[in-house]
Amino acid sequence: MPDNGFCESGRMRDELLNETLFLGLDHARTTIAEWADDYNQSRPHSALGYITPAAYAANLTATTGAFNTLAPAILISSMGMGSSRA
Image 1 (cartoon, rainbow, N blue to C red):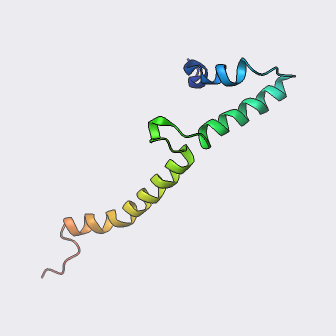
Image 2: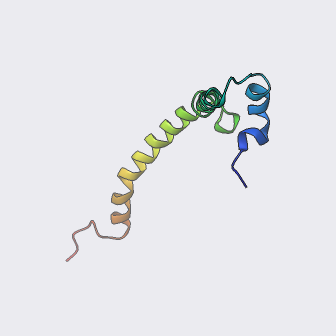
Image 3: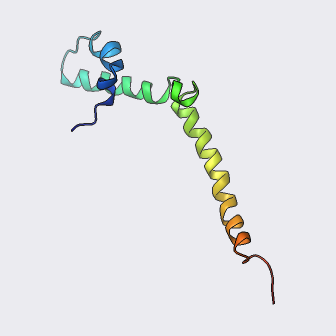
């Protein structure tokens, strides 16, 4: 089964496919790719707290990056490997 979530949700069909006369296959591919990029990067999404996916990803990366920096130290500390026991 193909992954066609845009069409299944109706948003792509309503906003793009029903409104656009494609002049050829290359035009269709370019236009659809631009729409998908806009949808995936620039539009706020309710599931993400009405922020854009790009902003959400940047926030997640920043949060995960901070966690990844701290995680090894926390793990070592919790295992007792960071203390100097004789």
